[in-house]
Amino acid sequence: MLKLRNLTDEEKKKASMLAAGVAAGMVGSRAAQKALPDAFDGKFPGISASVLVSSSVVPQMANPAVTGLAAGRVIDFLVDKVAGGRKTKREESLGNLKRRLERIKQGRISMTEDKPYKKWDVKVYNIPNWLPTNIVYGMALDKIRGLIRNPSFNRVTKKWVPAAYMHPAVMYFAKEIVKNNGADGREWLKICRGVAEWTHLHVPWTGEFLGAEDMFMHPGLVLETMDANGICMPVDCDCQVALNSAMLLALGIPVYFVLVGQYPDEPGYNHIICAVKMPKEYWGQLKHPPFFYIDSTIKPGRFEQDYLPKYHRIMVRRV
Image 1 (cartoon, rainbow, N blue to C red):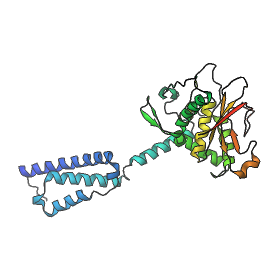
Image 2 (image 1 turned 120 degrees about the vertical axis):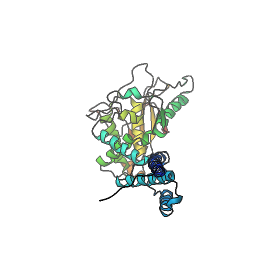
Image 3 (image 1 turned 135 degrees about the vertical axis):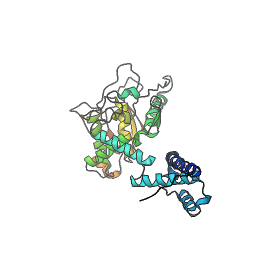
Image 4 (image 1 turned 60 degrees about the horizontal axis):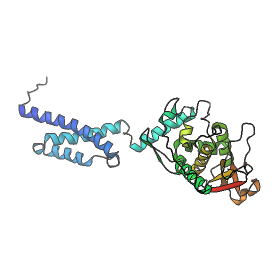
């Protein structure tokens, strides 16, 4: 039979300090790991372990609160390891990306249910139309280029949106196009044909309403409107070009904006497509070498690869 003695007041005080120290150590360990993941994630708590060893060797010199803090840190580390390891910020980001891609595959990638536009940030840029034509269109192209190449801040969601060519949905579909067209990432002609047709099939074109302002939609947000049938919201030629350009850049293929002026009595341009300047080995397969032109706006049933509309003026600019 085991006989237990009652603890003295001093021993009770030390035990309470030790227990409080352990609890504080575990909470502090998690808080520090969250605040400084690179300094704490997955690293053995050597200092805390040293404190525990010293406390066991010379218990009469040990401070119960300090010993408890050290024990709490070590316990938190061991519990974390037994549970498989707490996820780092990078791992959490990758996990979110995987879940996002699953929604893409299932045709449910909208982050705002059936009304994604509620979380879109609309900015209005006034480009003076009294400037020379080339400058006006050059400034407009700079706005589209900015969406493709640079991150942008959404003032509605208070979050940064990745540059379009690095957006998860853009990158996912770009890779799917490569895979589905028998390309290995180096066969530029197959990839360009795949991109042109994919956008034609999945992102319907709609002409702008007469007198409406130009709308430059972020390609990633356009893709988030995809429904269960794989169809996104209808967009105009500006947005199709932004999407096509972003997917090509995601695959490492340089791309150009091509502004087309189709009417002789108008000084400006009324249409935009994009183009890839092909290596010489492809020139024999092109209609207008050295460029392969991508126009996804052509009406259903009339889609044509390497299509360059008839024009009176043309402006080519690097994306």
